[in-house]
Image 1: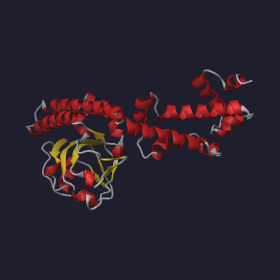
Image 2 (image 1 turned 45 degrees about the vertical axis):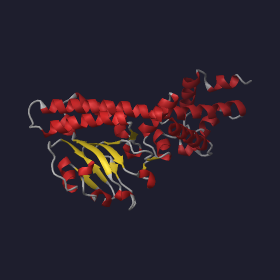
Image 3 (image 1 turned 180 degrees about the horizontal axis):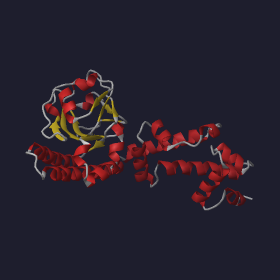
Image 4 (image 1 turned 60 degrees about the horizontal axis):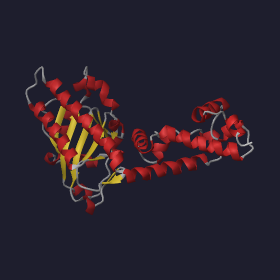
Length: 305
């Protein structure tokens, strides 16, 4: 795996000039001639990278980006945080696609001692990894391109005492818009979202139907996300918009459903039910059950007698 420690390292590897500013760089993808990245198994950056891309004539090739095919040629935004591992699987046809758009690279040193340094990782899209892209409308794309052009123009100016604050201000605006557009996507791409919800329900039903949960324990958010090939934060954000509950709450909801079934339809003791559902300690099961239902397991069972 290749690591790019600085923006200059990356640009040199891609046979590009620059950067205009050592800690931030914006360039147009059509200016990149080198296809060097296609030969790498994996790589990682020590800086933030945001790409706004257009793929030409993709419908003829069916290029996939993580969970979805690029279903139209409008702008597609992807965001990568430092130390996230990247890989690219492209066939010979896809490698010949004409790609246009913009790329932003921001080294963490630029935003040290600014409010953005504290806030930047609060944006969920940095944790989505490359499995989930943002599909932009024409108007949204124009908004982001305008801000990127402002960053580029300022980074090309002579550095003075105002440069950092102006660039960071543009970046703050850029990330706020990106956050808005990501949350919009959860609503407008509702069909895909409900397909994911169905897969979550299927996974949890299958998981809690197993006989050896005491050895496996309860499913974690990471377990569910990995089974769906999604990042944990993306899955939780999507479920929150669709249902009002995050992934952990869905796990607990399914757990309580199974517990209620066994409490009402079997003669198993509460301890046996807790054991069957993957709890090592009865107290933990009882505490969770009461928190979710306002009744203890014994009180719930009593309503059926």
